[in-house]
Length: 168
Image 1 (cartoon, one colour):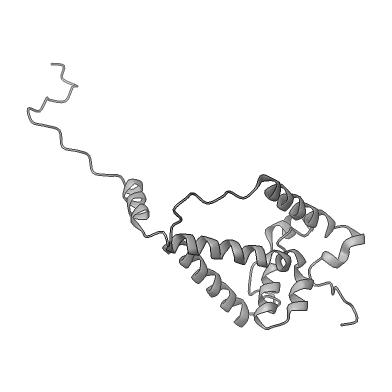
Image 2: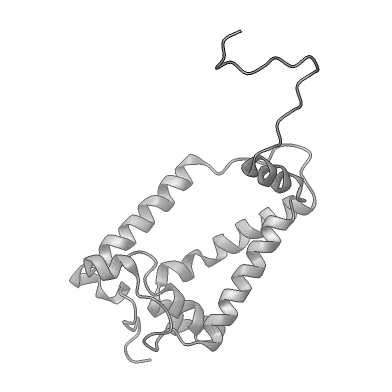
């Protein structure tokens, strides 16, 4: 036996204690599946409540959009906080003027979230159908087009805060 080698033990080896990441992974897998959609729903409602009571139009309440700060152009999500704040106050035309894409995607977001919640409460017997690839490509194209067009002068009505119907 070499002096740098550990001494041999006669008994069976004791298993190593699980690492922190293994313990966290085990706990996350043990959670009921309904926790995730309900948790996201609670988080979303909390955020909407915060936006209802703390105005995003007042400087200093929320950080500036990092994309807008770095490039000076609007990202597809620019105006979303103000749109949600206006929607919580019942001003849906104002919400549309802040981010028309968000308001147009709200039905899709609501249906997708509801399906997720229902499938978490009552798991389907068959695997659910996947979203068609063409729809995902269309969604990507629409979001990219919105991103580009809202920064062009001819489509300035897509920029946050520009009234869609100036006379209203």
